[in-house]
Image (tube, rainbow, N blue to C red; front, side, top):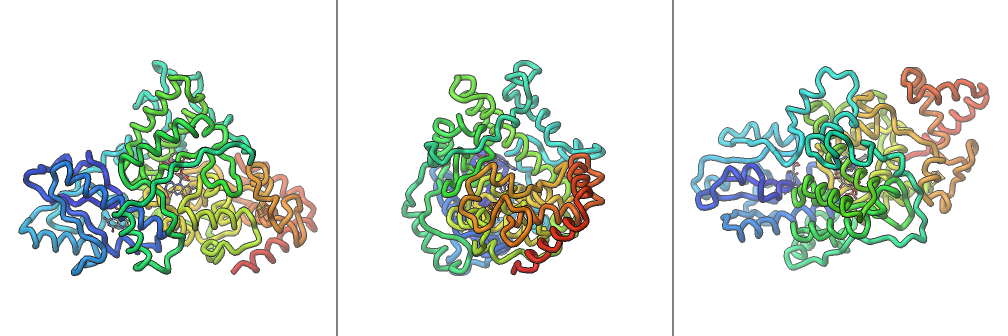
Length: 499
Ligand code: FAD
Ligand code: DLZ
Ligand code: SF4
C-alpha cells in the first residue's frame, strides 16, 4: 500500500514511482489529527482536503486504485497511523511505502510504524542530508552562498559559469513603493466545483470556531488550475514582481506576487518547472532580469535554504528562544482589533485570504512580535495556523530564524527590526492610522518607533557585537539619559496595554 499525504499531491512522488499501479493500492486519508495539530485557517483545511480529493481522482484516471477516506466517513480513526492499520486489515495487505513527510513530528511517528518503508522526498533541489553536510562546519551560513550553488546546479540564469545580466542578485532594484493608482493584476479565481462545495460544507460544519473566512473560496485545487494560475502570473504580474516585491498597499492583498505557495507546497506545482518558465520569459524579452532573478532566488534560494535549515536543526528548532522573549501573543493577532492600522490590515487580510505576502509577514506581524518580545513558539504556532501555504519545514525557519532571530543568527545575519518609518516608506498604511508615524514620543507616537528603541536597549550588549546593528546601538548610546528614560517608559506603558 502506498500512503500519499495531503502535501504530496505529485504524480512523480517517490512512493508512487516505486509502486506498480496494477498491483498496489494508494491510501489517502483526511484525519482529525492532521486537521487539528494547530488550529488551521478554515481556507487552509478546505484547500488541502479539496486538493487531496481532486488528486485522488487524477490518480484514478491514471489507472491507480485509490482508497480515499473522508473526514466524516464512519469508522475514521482520526489519525494517519490508525487509517494505515485499518486499510491494511481491510485489504489484507502487509507492507506500506510512503515518501518522507514534511514535518519532524510526523516523521518521528511514521518511523515507529513497523511495516512502513520511507523513501526520500526528492521534489526539492537540495537533499536534506547534502544540505547538512554543506552547512556543517561553516562559520556563517548565508543564503547567498547557497543560492549561487543552486544557480550553478540548475544552470538557471547562467551564461556559462557567470550569472546572466552580470550580477547574481538584483535585490537592490526591488524596493519601490507601489502607487495605489497602478493597475493591479488580480490572481485568477477558480469557482468551487461540486467536490470543493462538499468540502466547504464539511469544513463549515466541523471547524466552525477556527480562524478565518471560509468563503469566497477561489484557490486552485487541481494541477491544471494551479498551472493556469502560474501562467497568468508570468504574463500579467511577473514583469513588475521584482520592482514592487517589498511594497504593501491597503486593500491590495496580492500586488504583483505569484500567490502560488499553497500549490507549490502541496505538490501541485514543481519548483524547477516554474523557474524554467520564468527564465524562458526573461530570455524571450517579456520580463526584466530583476523580476526573473528575484523570483528564481525565492524559489531555488530561500525556499530550499529554509528547508535545509529545518531538517538540519530539528528536533529542537521549534523551541529556540535566543532573545528570551516571553510575552504572550496579543489577542489582536486573531481578531485584528488594534488601533495600529498596519497590523489591523495584515491580520484582517490574513483572516479573509489565508494569505499575506512576504513583507507583510516579515516587516509587520513579524517585526512587531520581535520588537514587542513575543514568545517565538506562540508566534510560530500562529503562522503555522493562519496561512494556506504553512507547513512546518518552511514556516518554522522563516518564523524563528528569519523573522524572530530566535536562533541567535543562524539563519539571518541581523534581526529584521524596523521603526514605523520603514512601514511608512513601503506602504500606505500610516495614512489611516490612529498613531502618528512621525511622532517619536508621547501618546500618539507610532508604537513601532517606541518599541524599536526599547528593543535596542533591551538587547544592547548582543546587538553591539553585531556589525550590522552596532551603528543603531551607538545612536541609542548617544541619546540623553532623559530621552532614553522617556522612550523606555512610553514603550513599557504600551507593552503593558497589550492584552
Ligand atoms: P512570491 O512573493 O510570489 O514568491 C514566489 C515563491 O517564492 C513563493 O510562492 C514561495 O514558494 C517562494 N518564497 C518566497 N520567499 C520565501 C521564503 N522566505 N521562504 C520560502 N519560500 C519562499 N512561505 C511558505 O511557503 N510557507 C510558510 O508557512 C511561510 N511562512 C512564513 C512565515 C514568516 C514569518 C515569513 C517572514 C515568511 C514566510 N513564508 C512562508 C515565506 C513567504 O512569505 C511566502 O512564501 C510567500 O509570501 C508566498 O506568497 P507568494 O506565492 O505570492 O510568493
Ligand atoms: C495540512 C493537512 C491537513 C489539514 N489535513 C491533512 C489530512 O487530513 N491528511 C493528510 O494526509 N494530510 C493533511 N495535511 C497535510 C499534513 O499535515 C502534512 O502532510 C504534514 O504536516 C507533513 O508536511
Ligand atoms: Fe503601523 Fe505605526 Fe504606521 Fe500606524 S503609524 S500604520 S502603527 S507603522
